[in-house]
Length: 367
Image (cartoon, rainbow, N blue to C red; front, side):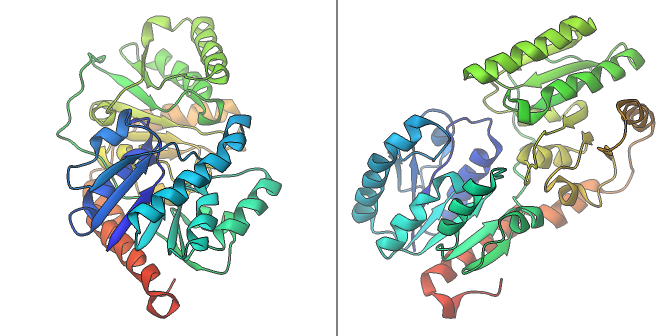
């Protein structure tokens, strides 16, 4: 089967991008796989030699920017040209911002599977995108929350959790504090880094040896403004010497290995964060607010504190202090993780969905 894998971010720290690469590499051992990416910077370089071709085309996702809208006709032209050249049996679209590609693929008679990790808060935009999603042969959602949020009918729909992508063999090329809490995220207000710093300041009073390590970069002006706010809070709290801001980390996996606590407090309904998968895999404590698909992601795992969002900050702080002073669970958390998020099982199920899409409605497995 000839598969065109379309769309991923070039930032190697992005969780969905890393899982996209591993999926490409697995499928390439069994099928003829082509990966279409905007450029060769970052994660595209991690694709294995078994991928037939890494097609460098600026086929852009639709974001809320004038450039993205103005560039859309050229993106469509490039995608049509690419499909005509490769003649794939099926197209996999990595995430909803490439939703317009569904219409292009169907127009050209190519089955298409859309993979959703996306959250959209604007109801009007959601309705527009839903029209395109409904035309895909199949849609894969990363969580029940993600599936319910879109509520699209008309095609085969699946709930397939992202696989774990943690790799214990990777080393980190920087010195870390002997004891630290960890945040891995792009610098953006929706990711809740400001709130993570606030909660760390509570722990800093309780444990003088604890530091905070933040891995994340600020590329755009709005991110740089948010970075200034976070740095201002750090200064106001008097914890500058306790915070290590690493900026962009090419391969962040090893950061989790010695972390005392992983903090993820998004300010949006996060469908199924990959960084949470990495923290669950290593077995460190996790502090989260359970928004979006996170609650179902951590269900059944001890060593996780899910804050009650309707509690006052003082009550949340008290819960965190008690959580950090308690002992970690003794059960086989790694086994639970493997049962829930087995990587090979994910790939095989994913492969069956792609195959079913090429066979039409009669060959589709039940949703």
